[in-house]
Length: 476
Image 1 (spheres, rainbow, N blue to C red):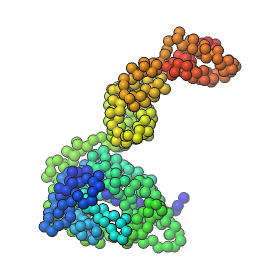
Image 2: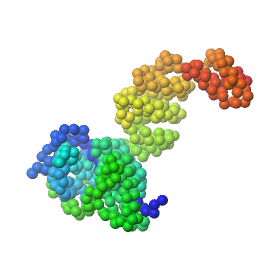
Image 3: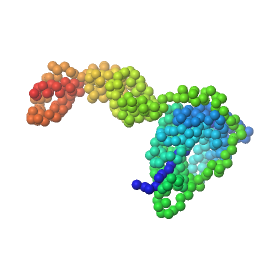
């Protein structure tokens, strides 16, 4: 076990879901493939243009702040963050420095320093040979930055925080935070030390998957320890992550805040949030949906296993379907049975269906909640067996229909009539003399084999409890 203590702080940027950009009316469309079509004189920094604050973006950040119990600012303003790079048309980025919209809060057990708004940069492409291209469609898109306190101590915990933030943004409708599309990017500030004093801080930028977050942090921690143990002096710097080689690489010396020469943007009016009734904490908190951690607690109290609860916590469509089913069943025993068929059998059918996406599929278009609830009720009441339930579920998913009609048509209604089943049991006893001898010799467990034969003979429609009772009676 390492003698060094890891200290990690995260800076996460997430694009917000709004119709237009942060300071102009150009379209905010993350799916646009054509370069430089969603641009205007404002986001391209033409002389004489004036930015206008996107109210919806401000509201999204305030909602996130309320969800994590942060302190919502009464007064806020935008600043100019000065640095030159080809993907910033102004030569500065409009951000927030001294007066962010949100201070403090906690998410997934991690303390938050601040949450603020800024505009996104353009997208650069460096795969064109000896020159680069810049697409300004993304320039000016509303960007929320959340900065944590340096209180994370493992790569796994860092990744868990990022996952919970993504889930919160999706739950609130603030953004999709799709990391593959670059809608959420993670930057990790990492240091190690044998004492309570922080070591040399290194920032790893633009981590675009949860796997990359874990691997990059783990790599840096190992690199730091190896360097210190060999007497090498670490330098404060910014590093990138090479996905293919799975190593970090030096990019530039790490800047401090004074390097950006922040100053208030003179073109953007100051924000007085307390004067906007719609942005009051009371109004915002009333508008919040059930939050992920609240849903986890509710579902586990209902008796769901944590891994099953997580399916519904992380997938809004599945959660809505489940809640409708629970309301229709109105019974805890049936509800827990429904969970089993939902998270294993129905989930398996969806995952094998190439025409849909598991996370976004509307299950009700495949199997109406009423039909699924009726099927679960039949299984719970012993009208059909577990095997029959799975078979009918598959047909419902692929072709639709009525559960009871399908059970009759497929001959899957469970047979419990002793008179009808006794002749079948006798036939099985006559055909399995060796097994019968084992049973009579004291090997009671072989009766399960005989019951299985009975289920096979009845094509899954025999009631296993009744079959077992008849076997025990005829075998003495």
